Length: 128
Image (cartoon, rainbow, N blue to C red; front, side):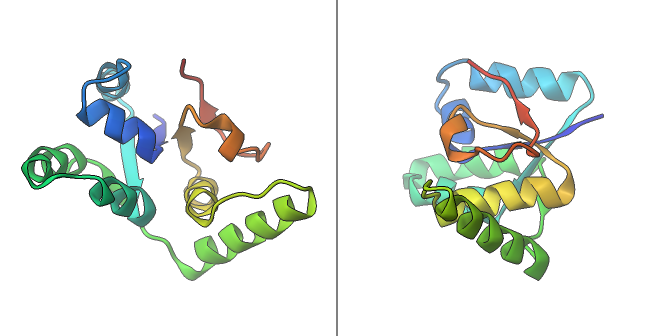
């Protein structure tokens, strides 16, 4: 069984019925896999929710596995940001937090923003 961490854009698309993301996530759960979320994906999700979208979003994320952003996860995010800056690639703090969460908990990230997650040791579920 794999635990997947959907990137915020995947959650937003699923909630809005776009790009077959809901079908993708439901399919993974139907196969016995789990979905996870973290403080960053929830914060980014709620930053764009209108009041009438809150209830469906809460129902949607309530079944996900909650992953804490601990000191070691935050430290790893900072290290990733530093490392990639030295390689000439500027990564956002939110994306490095999501990547560090996935790496720490051994989650498979679901994203279509592959350029924001260049880490080779990060497991990413391929989507179109």
